[in-house]
Image (cartoon, rainbow, N blue to C red):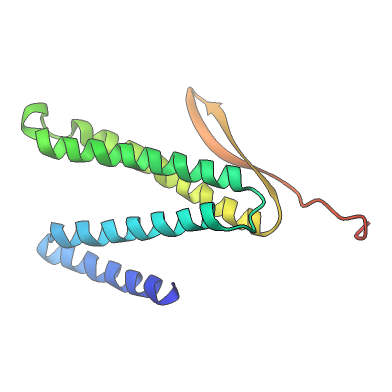
Amino acid sequence: AKLWAQGLSLSAVLLVVLYIWYEAYVVFFLMYGSVVVYLTLESAKQAFTSKDRHNCEVLQALWKFGIGLYGAGFTLWVADNLVCAQLGYGHLHILWHFLACWGTLIFVLLLMAFTADEDGYKVEFKFAWKCLVPVPFLLLSPKEQSKKDS
């Protein structure tokens, strides 16, 4: 996994250089897509197959919610590309960015939940409403102390 991550990082740098010099969209889409696929599969493996997790339900719910938002955004982006002549430029593309942003935010919360789970915290996924916008967050409860520690 470490070698894969290093390879992805190096290719990300090359991607930026190619994109700036040549506007190589195909390379961008392939590299971006490979990173998304890798992160999706690896996080799914961690959320659904690890037997050592204490917060499986929350981790799996975060994964499903994040991939659902991201997948919905991707679907709208594809639809936008297929029918852009009829819709005009960018209508569904805007929703892609909004949903991909929220999916990425949920993925970051998932990474934080993985870390908290490893440290033995109880993890809860919550929303707070701020100015009519739902703001997702994690609520962590401290580790339970055993009677020996008291």
